[in-house]
Length: 167
Length: 93
Image (tube, rainbow over all chains, first blue to last red; front, side, top):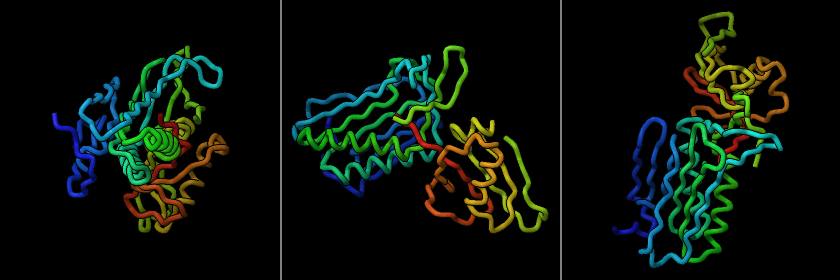
């Protein structure tokens, strides 16, 4: 398998859609991959052929069993369909411009996600660890500020309420 | 989905679709609202209306505005067919 080029090529932009519930956008020739998925997350594969990348940083956000000290049984994610994908793609592009990283792949899950399951999966590749760590922190910080995705807490009695979590 | 008409005349009206999420959806009990508004109405007018409809449930909620899936920072005049979302604090991740 030939791994994508590390060089940004503006002429290679393309967008693919998987289905109505999830979309896959591949921008700048495999440099950025954004997937909003309705089922379990399939981690992006690691790859031993990235000879220029000294850092491969992976973040998995998982669902906790409590919110504000209250027991919950799951989180249900809601998105503004279309805008969430667009904002996430824009954010990924901004991250790649702001930090000297090579590739950024992100998957965000929608719908009901059980305790302990992964809701957000991000992989960043870069020459050194520092820029990957800084880029990861900024990307997730900004995601939580501007991408129109929300959480509903599922309580033990089955009721669903907007999550109070702002982290 | 509910429909409301907030104008006296059918001559100078525009049709607006409001998408509701999270606390807005919870407060209004709707995923989507269709409204007839007077021409010249703005995002500010619509937000005021939505907050009134929520009977105080959105008083402590800061809302950003998106028109046709783009954030808008300032008050802006709406056009016939616009899709508007009042975006409560987001919580992805």
